[in-house]
Length: 321
Image 1 (cartoon, rainbow, N blue to C red):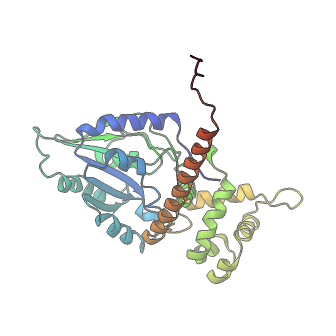
Image 2 (spheres, one colour):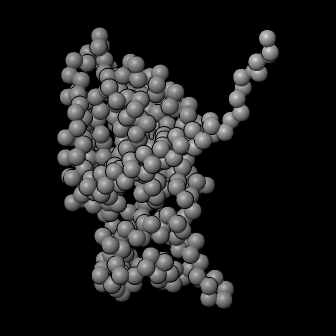
Image 3 (cartoon, helix red, strand yellow):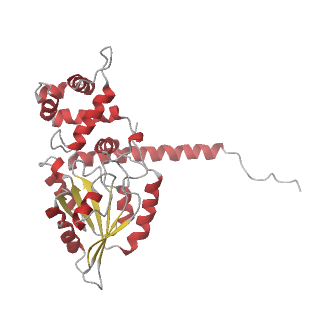
């Protein structure tokens, strides 16, 4: 089942961005370094597409160090876009944000023409932590739950540099199924919007092929990477459940508890530095989604035609002369 989550406050955020963007010079979009493609909001691109964009690939300390450079190159190849990678809790690289914005809008400087920046991103991507690091004080609320920030906040980073923080926002319909699963695994989606076991099975399907050794080491499975890769996703989860004591009375495995353990380990980084997609993989998923969307649109158009043909005519009967 496709994962969707767009609560009411996100609709309000969309409206706020539409209003604010008129006076903005640069848009900063925070991305999760473990899923830099899936965490990019297509709705945000639609709302702010004409503005210079600074893509901040955040949480790089949790991501695969061999994959993050690929994403930097991918984003830096786009027009009017500059990309940097950082860890929001590190004060030194966080300051690169101001420098990056200046490069994208060099004429915006001084009190007469202050830099006006909008910072956006999916829920739980680290925006508030970054803002607190930049401003050297806790101006924004932080937390490990999706949707902590609920209202727009104005942050003054310098006399001529204003930053508007917006609540985390997803988009009304996630058409790339793989992105939905990855967003849920990262903690960007509310807990009531997905089944944890289903998300973990998808996560394990990817990890067993690309990070099998890390899985084996974390959960003491005693298997080589190739051996783990040959297992079914359910088998991997069952082995983790046994190793972690997720067993109910009667010996039945508690797969829900095992799923929660895997999600917590992935989100906290104790599984190791992991990235759930490469630019090439993500482009492939986008292409697949585009084909499905085209087929969906054609099917809808055909259904609308049938309904129109079946609908009774509303023309008044002619009266005899």
